[in-house]
Image 1 (cartoon, helix red, strand yellow):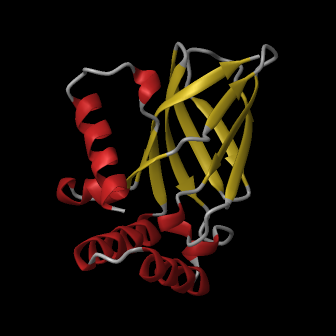
Image 2: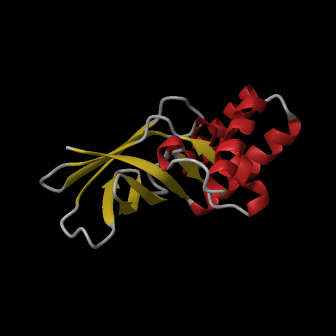
Length: 168
């Protein structure tokens, strides 16, 4: 687990200093105070935003396990991008996504639906907290991840950065 945190920290620091190509780092971050960001930033390896020639769009990703309490919770959102000068909007049963597109990458803000995203109800929060306890041995990290989970359940939002776009 420490290796994962160090990898995230290195990736975030590397990107923050402008020394990497945007294709190298695709992150998802829960809005938290700066001192908590190392525990609130997740590498999302399987996220994909597809934009078809006809404007139909699809965002797919596996939700970070430390936020949902399971390793294979997939989200898929759809939309239509008609005006290239405006942000891209996608929606799903789990929430709404607003993306700013620049060439082959996008940054997206996710606003989740409190009624449908499992972690945002009491049973889902308890399940996610059990997952944290079962998968984190370090007490400092466990406390930090719990604070991130509590922050996420309060704000129900997150930000994708450097999301690679596939044009079809």
